Image 1 (tube, one colour):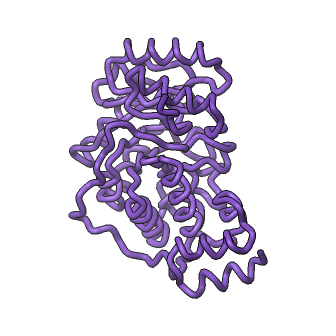
Image 2: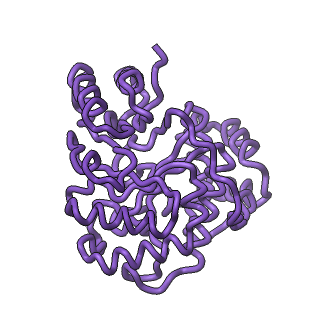
Image 3: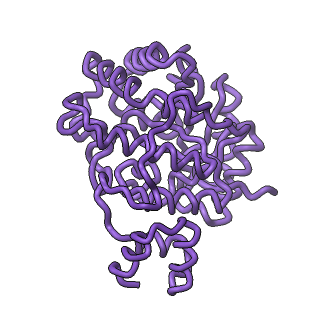
Length: 314
């Protein structure tokens, strides 16, 4: 379908479900094909289907599911679900709908990703990290949080990506100042997401154990009641276990691990971590039977979330 025709459909202001139906009827056979056909949009653009409405500060948090199910680790890093905070609102809505249709109840989204966000960095700042705050970008985060809640999805917010790109990971003064900025501008969205605030993607790549603890403490001081989680490189969980300010561990396994190796690792981490464990990045496909088996194995082992595919239910 031509971009001009797609743009006309969105310009009319039809509900997303109707738009998807029209696109399917025009030859887009899957949700993925619909997303691929969506017109490019700058981060500041708001289509009639997704009007800007700030989240009410007193809005209750989304109900937290007993088990988080997400499809966040599929595709390559540049197109991963966390980067939707840099995408168009229409793409966010379509991908939230697709995730929900597959059985997901949770999404993972970046607060800061300066290098490989797409099409622009994920940040509330206009330029360098910690600089002037963009009201348009703040509003986009609010809109995206609203869209996720409209689709019935819990949000885990990830504070720092692991990509570098100008993030001063070990400059505690600048990072804690940024925590204050994000808590002030997006506190209701972060608390109201119903999930966790994750300190960093693969925190042991760029931080120290002491800094993870310091930043977790700063977040809890800025937003009382916030649940804070830690994510580490494949196989690691020690910092999450040892830091009292960390409430949960997001565990990364190698996506190439066999089912047997994955099973042994997950059981070991659940037994020894002493905190809720969410299994991440055990598949970069998510739709094949191995991913579904691993997701079910993780839940059966006691994980409170799986983020690389929908469990098989076996």
